[in-house]
Length: 300
Image (cartoon, rainbow, N blue to C red):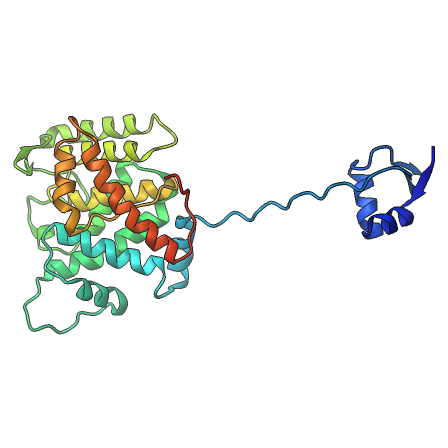
């Protein structure tokens, strides 16, 4: 059999001798064999095709948020998520702080002077909500648990006027019956069992879809496990699960509030109301991710 040396093969193929030896060692040249320490290559051997380099996997949104949070980066997507979600989620629940006031508190950790009176609870819960989002970012990969849900409530409501009331439980389930949208919710004595059942059912499916997350949210809001703060905690949990499952998150704005409430109420009859509302919000967040050049699955 006619054979050529590594040097001859390198010259013929226009590559380095080292590359030829590597191809031989990897078995990528048919018929190549060692004679002592020297490779002999069939004279009619063809140059192996180059392996395509694997594309570097883009960091997930959760990874970007953690990186920006750790570095205290200003003006990035972490910064924007904190302000947009805190303002909108609190505003839905009756906070009178403006978006600019919310931004000022986040950026300076101080309270700007205004001509109008500002409720202390609005300020406290705004600062607390920032910490809740940080907790979600740090914890997201661990999934949902009663302990985590109660911790979020404890962070949100600590230092509020509610927390000073004997009947109010901070970081614990409600003591008194409550309603949501004029509808009855789970009785206080039944909340622990209802929450355990919810988490058990939700945990059956490993890879979550958007509908799985929305179905969990509907059941959570109908249980209404806490005396106050259920809407904000519920939306924080959806953020957590979107980040964990690499689903583009969404923020319910004031413009979407009525559609969001209708979707919660009509979920059993027509899931499309809530789904479409959240998809609309998700489309906005995709634009935010596009702006910050963060990749996501286009089919989501």
